[in-house]
Length: 72
Length: 383
Image (cartoon, rainbow over all chains, first blue to last red; front, side, top):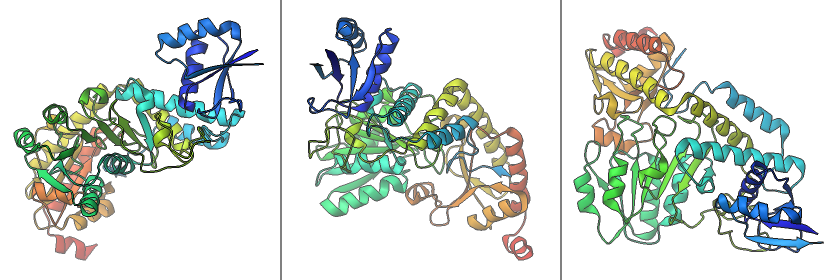
């Protein structure tokens, strides 16, 4: 499974990427899968095992994702 | 050449600005359009520039800093996007045509009224008395592009609350160490190519939380493509169309240069030059400086008239005989010239900046003194 986080804008995705890298995670900015609606054209992909750490880092920065999606 | 037209556009640009523009051109990619490596690199470049500018200008949420083509573009977005039909807008007597013309167009189109608040540079008590239930917006320049005088926009915003205040910071961004968020304004507009030292074709609009003008331009933003309405989130809501990535990259590099120098140091440098210029000009016979003579109350912009001279002819002689480059005429600000008593003849404007040196000012003063001591007709006939 892969975890996709979306943030509404490319700016939001870029900001998330920076926050997550600073937190020592390995986010990848990728094309938003077609199944995710209502966001910008990119998503931040992470290993599902990183979800908790990612959300802690994003919450600390006041930048929680608008949507989380798990896809095979 | 002595360049004293920094208020029109800063020159020369710092080397990192040129390099960043060229690098963005070489690298290519359209930010927010697709996610291949070049598109992502461009998006990261824009993001980094926005973050640098937000840090420099005292904006905590960089997504509220919108990239525009110019200060004029930003002012139009705020004015036309926030004003419905009717009501009244207040402005100062120092506004540039970037404010005067959009307001006049709005008034003609909707039957609204524009009222100018006088004062030198702004009568805050008169502003307070003018606020009424019909007041929709107050637009104030942060500093005059003619006299350089700084307006008390923070105090004005306090007086006007809850009426939104739009600040035109074209002449103060990059010159004054002021956090935009602390001005209390609903929105702040600025050029990227003046005090911020970026390339032409760049500008900024800061929108405070709670102030959400309708976008005046609709179109692709790279996201929410299934919807036929503009996205709700900043900055995409106001940035339809492909961004000026090379310009933004240059502007971001300029913000880093300014941050490294420090805006307080920049202000101190320009204040010393302005004081030198004012002291020199006021000592010359026939020269009349417009506005306050206190350098602390100004940015590095000084305009003057010369007895017996047409402003344009004087500026031409400064250029041709002495290589001193200034701007003459009405400076796209006839309202300000009316307020200052220099309409319709206009004035000669000298403006200093990051690259101006004290000996530039001294040489320019010598040239002004030489010309002012002579008759226009005699000088122009011999040139």
